[in-house]
Length: 543
Ligand SMILES: Cc1cc2nc3c(=O)[nH]c(=O)nc-3n(C[C@H](O)[C@H](O)[C@H](O)COP(=O)(O)OP(=O)(O)OC[C@H]3O[C@@H](n4cnc5c(N)ncnc54)[C@H](O)[C@@H]3O)c2cc1C
Image (tube, rainbow, N blue to C red):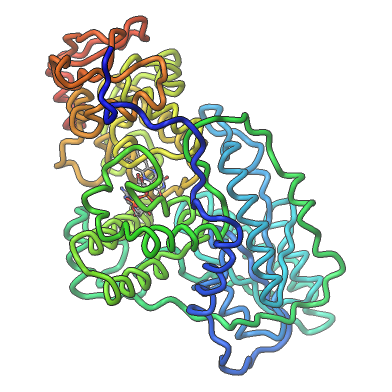
């Protein structure tokens, strides 16, 4: 069999993201810190101790909670709580709430944060336990006047915020009678989005239901603030008996099966800043982002910022600052704009979660769609384990469970397949994503899933994805599939005789519902759906 070179899949092998040496990363981080911190800051007016409770903001640069704590105190105590509800517990459908790959990414991020804080005059106290138990007792022990933290928007996180505020009052107010401390306050600071919530032209409760309307309004009426400059020296820290050491973090480490392919993301602010430098400045990929962003294979088709954004290792505002700098120093075109356009999507889902509240997690979604979804575990497991027989679906699902990442194109394809072809309860898919994804974020994950399932706010768009068409458009040479499903080999162009027919032998075309599909022999059987049912599914309405 003759293959042209171009149809051969790339050699297997793990690709580190960012692909820089430790030394190169050190230089990038040092330079970026120089750019985004300041050595001449206003004098600190505050007194006593302020605690920074790190949540999904595991960074120093553009960290407003950290800045507020610094300016309002004489000493900052940085704390991270390893919450047992997130680590080691399972979700509604039995998957680990935080899977092993994200756990590793988070632990790496904590090690990096501790190292960077130490370099800048502080340290990080990492404690195992619930924030509502740990923070009040630390606040009492250090007589802290305030606990600063980044504000979140979804129910589980809001619940913890309320418990922390309540317990702080209970525990620290009782101390107030004897030594006149009036109780430690919890001060929640907005920091997760590119546009600041206070700069929106509308209240989140009346946020437009259509993305384009939202985008046009904020682009016209709001401005992205520059990132907050922190002082380069953040110390001194309070007197802490035992800060713990790096090796203690390894108690939370998890066993991860060794793999020989796919992307391996390194957690932490240093790695995130390095990735940004690599994508924008070293490889100049920002200038072609719009043309490449729908790819599926390898580190460079899109930014891969999402794992660092979701954990807060990177701030969206700092990325925005760097886009503007790139536009001024290199080039400004559709691609540089398009990255901002995508970051507005991220903002949109965050603000939408405030409007939608818990309906985001309900079966019927914000639109309360009634539907008879299946919870067939066999079918679901075929999807989850990459055994549906649809190569493009299976390859994407293998990538997800092996690396904790999947392209945006892949996510839309597998979401559509689970919901619209298999007819499975979309929440099972969303929870599997929640467990696996390095970049899991409740707003973006459940926001995108409700959209994809047709139960989100915007019912107008038809989000059905025809698998053969997607394969033809986005993996025409079958390279992505061959990379993940080594049992399949790409078929030379001249031998393909129907759309999406990119692989050798194992694949047979099948008439399925109203669409032509390709299915591998021996695949899990997917129930047929009539075209009327398909349409009904597509519209997300009762027939
Ligand atoms: C079913 C489904 C579930 C998803 N779950 C998540 C999730 O849990 N966390 C998450 O960060 N993204 C999620 N996404 C959105 C998107 O797929 C990822 O953000 C993107 O693939 C990350 O790769 P990147 O950083 O290279 O993206 P790029 O193309 O480089 O985009 C840059 C940034 O823009 C933001 N962005 C781009 N597209 C979207 C989008 N559709 N929604 C929200 N933000 C976007 C991300 O922060 C991303 O890092 C989901 C999409 C779908 C269809």
